[in-house]
Image (tube, rainbow, N blue to C red):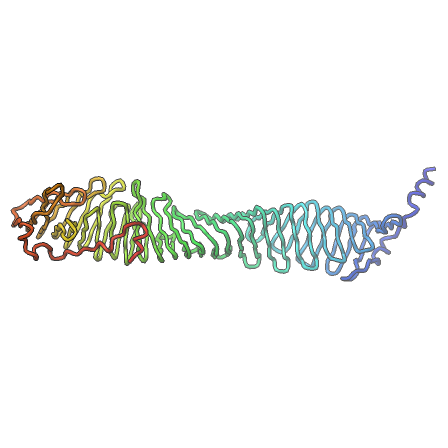
Length: 508
């Protein structure tokens, strides 16, 4: 009875020896799918005409060789292969998996279960992989991991495409590249194993030693450590950040160049330089910025805005030295100025002004060969003027209070100039006032020369003049004052150069 049932069960199946199997094939557009070997070969006459192959199964199609434990070969050149599946294409590419579904007409393979794809220098593992043998194109969409044998880097991503002929990867979704020297995360990345150049599309972060790069797009040469970013990018290194719409970076020299809406920011956030073009050197921690250049320096509860054709920053002891050159103007609510060269050091909190400097504080204009402003707690604390010092303060619509001398030392109280000590050939013109019919009127002018003078100021106007040595002084009634005594040599009203707001620092 058992033998009868067994015969009935296998009646539709023909059993063919391995020797015959080696000669069999199914034809297709790229030649035949050849069965090179199978320990057992069964032909199922009741199903779809599939040939069942078991044991040391080997196929060949075009230049690809396939192996597995068992397989189904269909008349339309489809192959379903199971167990220890492998595909070898040429002498460089091999894929392994638990399951293979192969379409011989399209030369397309679907690999599933413990998929591993290898070439000369890399190994890709994934849960599943679609491989186009004609185009040598591998695609995964359920996550993948690539190990580069040459440099030891490991990359994982949600999706990926490998173009074997070009040795080029296209990665997407949660891309992570980990290398002994760097770490890269991003949304979309292209990578050529032949050149080591990675191209980024979308938000990307690169960490390499103490340097952190954030970009929206560009390329990075991983072998030569050169970056070329063409979308908004930031580079952070040693407590500084440089950013721009386009940015080039060379790690070997530690040099970064930026163009378009450039910003260089100190880690404290108290110092920020803006412009259209910038350069930063990691080695000597120097930077340069130009093109509508602006320095923003946080001072107490206010900000000093400085413009110059070019701005430079460099280390200065424990702090930074900032230099602004050519057509310099600055604005702060209570302090404005202009000169050709300005230097600021946070090591000694000194602002130094050179080449036709002029400073405004309230109604006072101060000029000299050089001007220094000492800051304390973010506020103007002391003023030093060397050579041809001159204070000019408007008394009324047509007259000026004036003080001049070789050296001036000023003292600020709550950011307002409160006292001015003048030494060396000190001279003064100041107008006296009296109240008449409810209004202040100028009634006289005091013209004095003295080696040392102390001037008291109140709300920008001279309130008192103290002669520290014996003066040569004359008080004239206003209608009797000689015209040539009313304006001292060197008195020049430069109020047209005064910035009235932040935007004013850019007006020549």
